[in-house]
Image 1 (cartoon, rainbow, N blue to C red):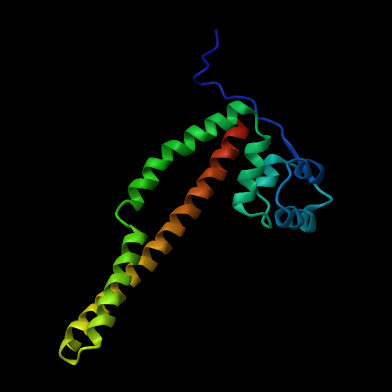
Image 2 (cartoon, helix red, strand yellow):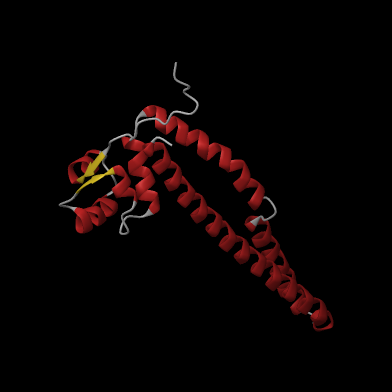
Length: 165
C-alpha cells in the first residue's frame, strides 16, 4: 500500500492561448495586452505564469479560472492562511487614521493661523499635520509593498499546485 502523504500528485496540464483567454471574457485592455504580445502562442500554464508582459494580477485571474476546482480550493486555503500574517504585518499601520489626523491638524493649524497670538500653536499643528501626512504616505507605500509581495507568493503557490508539489 502506498503512503499518500509522501507521494507527489501528478502535474496538471493546462493550456493557455488566445482562444482560451478570449473564452474567459477578460476586460478589453487586458485582452488587448495579451493579444499584442502573445497572440500566436500556445502556452502551458507554467509557461504562462512566467510571461513578463502579463501582470501578476492577470496571471492569477486566468489561473484560478482554468485550474481544477480542487486546486482552486487549495489555493484559496493557502491565501487565507497567509492573510493572517499579512494582517499582522499591516495592523500597526492605519493609513485612514493618519490621513484623518493630518487633515485634522491641518485644519486646526489653518484656524489658529488667523490669530497672530496663536501663530506658534498654528506652526505646531502644521508640523504635526506634516508628520501625519508623511506617516499616511509611508503606510500606503508599505501596503503596496506587502500587496505586491503577496501576489508574488500567490503565483508561486499556483505554480506549486500545478506541479503537484
